[in-house]
Image 1 (cartoon, helix red, strand yellow):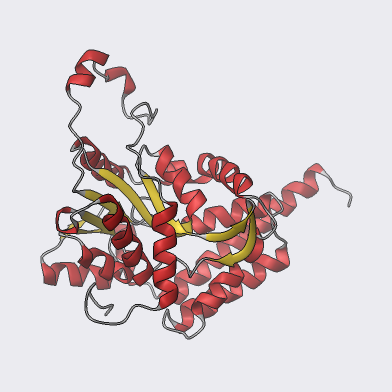
Image 2 (tube, rainbow, N blue to C red):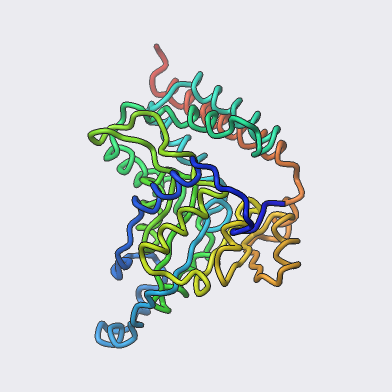
Length: 319
């Protein structure tokens, strides 16, 4: 069982570095009020009434949302990888190597000695590309693959916090440039994400610290809370995974969303709120072994690659 936040275990330096880097990179301005989110614009009130209903900002409270299977169905990194492959960021050989590393990671568990090194190599395909290019591609991939995968129920939770005058951040291992795109398109404040090192606006292929997962998420939220004057006891956090128990334990109002079996049990034992927006059939799948899920994910990636190659051959039958 992952330890609770503040349980006395020393935080690895790479997790602390990753968290502090994520906090520095996160947007902190109030979210835009003119986002066209498709939530019933024809029924909007007159501008004068809308202005009268604005709630004063609550500077001491905020909400933090995990992304994968919490606010979005599936893994955002999968949608990103598929989109980058389609744009020739890497080769079929690269994606096969990435898939093998992911299978090894999932089969051996998150406590394997060199997990961050393996994950960093898997993300090295951005080396030589610009930050501006990644942000632009993130916009396109959101429209192509991610927008229709947003859970309406979780998005409604985020909007409740916004309506209460609170700021809302995503907290995810997804690259921060893409995470910020997701947050902006959903009308949220910003995102805490994995920070890739870049020099003069060009990625070096190395991470700043590590992926933003586990204790790195905790360090990111702590650093952001200190900088923004947040009272963590008044804050809320939402996640689907037992890996985020340290993050959920950090705030005063934790909530398990579409939880895996371990998190559901932990939440029940600790009196945490639980929200499940999956159908009964999908919810039952939480008992599937992680290695099987990994195999299905890799199969889906390879299937997408094969379909893309067949499509290209139909358009250009000759090499």
